[in-house]
Every structure is written in structure tokens, then in C-alpha cells.
Length: 112
Image (cartoon, rainbow, N blue to C red; front, side, top):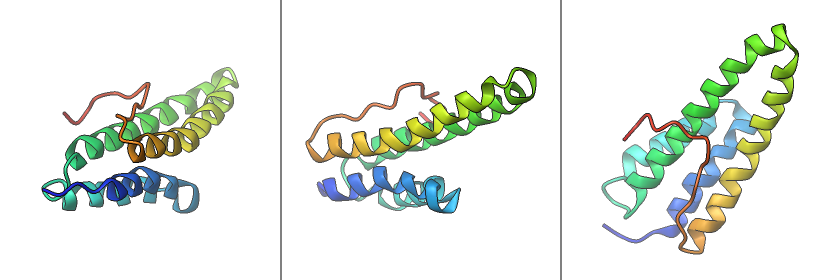
């Protein structure tokens, strides 16, 4: 296995493709994780963390839909989720480039 922090940073930043394509922020990190997990040191850990984060944010977004119709609070929650999905990948990419361990709060650990 090789050390490749740039690949890990790219994997974290690829989540931002959600802003452009809608689903690319899930598919690109998934492909990078599946193809590079045996080649790049730490990719398995980071890939699972990213995929769990993406799935968790999708679940939270789905839970906001009924809240929009019931209380109108779902819109505020969706804006919060959008901000989290914009800021956390950038912050964690910076952490990875500095050799620190990234953290995605509110993540449900689905893939172990």
C-alpha cells in the first residue's frame, strides 16, 4: 500500500459534486473507495466514513420532508443539512492534508 494524502483529500472534496450533479457526491467517493481501498493506505477508513456520512445526510434529508408539511421546520433543517454538507468535506479535507483524523458528526455508522 502506498501513502497518498492527495487521493484522500480528493475523496473528501469529491463530495462537493452534490452541489453540481446532485448524486455525484455519493457516486464518485464510492468509486474511489472501492477501487483504491486496497492500494492507498487509509482509504478504507476514509471511504467508509464518507459513505456513512453521505447516507446519513440522505436519511436526514428524507426525514425533513414530512416536517415541511407538518410544521414548516423541515426547510430550516434542510438548509442546515446543506450547510453541513458544504462545510464538513472542506474542513475534513484540510484535516487530512495536515495528517489529522477527520470527523463527521451526526453520522450513522452503517458500513463498518
